[in-house]
Amino acid sequence: MSIARPASYLILSLVLACFALSCGSSGRHLQSITLTQTAINNGQEDQFVATGTFSAPPITVTPLPVDWTNGLMAPPPRTYSYTLTTQPYVVNCTTVGPEALPVVAFAPPDPNAPTSGTSKIVVTAAATPACLPGGQSAQ
Image (cartoon, rainbow, N blue to C red; front, side):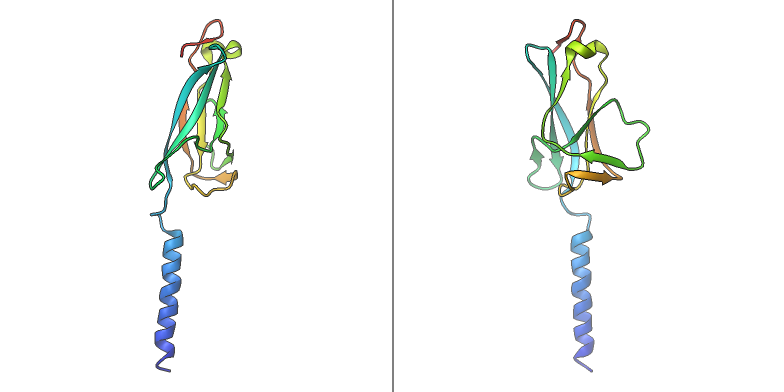
């Protein structure tokens, strides 16, 4: 019986250590998103690319897989549905004009999240297209 007790403590310690390592909050996570805006197609379109900043190396990822939407997400939903892509988001300035809605990129903080899914927490960034009257970009 004297071996059984230390063995059970060892097994319990290993289980707790595995649980702490797999569920701990110290893992790598997305901290912020930055959007870079560029005029393309002779200034008729604005292109947005997302860059992510993470808590551990690699710190910066470009292009960051994100989901894109137009307009601010207010009020925020209880659960975000997303489909991540690394493709840039393009706004056609000839159709939206100067009243273009903000472009929003969002992604779950977990860098290992599936390409499609839902998340209660997301990291977001927003930028307004630089479209001028007449369908040209101010970029």
